[in-house]
Length: 89
Image (cartoon, rainbow, N blue to C red):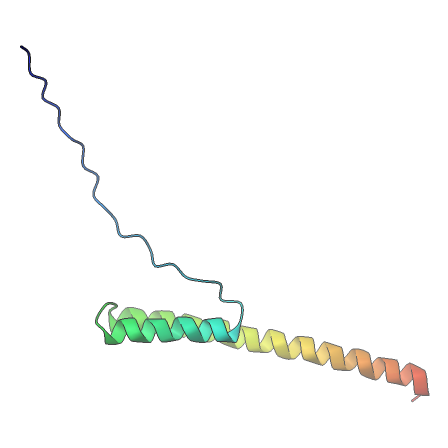
């Protein structure tokens, strides 16, 4: 009886990146920042990494605020333009 030896090929496992939800609202950005804070406090994430990611999240939050302000301003400008036409101001 012939014995067949085979070597199992092992592939080093790489940890999958953490799942990040959409960051399209200030609430979601805050939630992600909170998650990073908890992970850093629990020692699951190096504080240097948490700091870098938090800085990026702050920038995203600022952009969301600016986009919201811009949209509100455009709405107000449309209302004012409509009043100008209606009352000949």
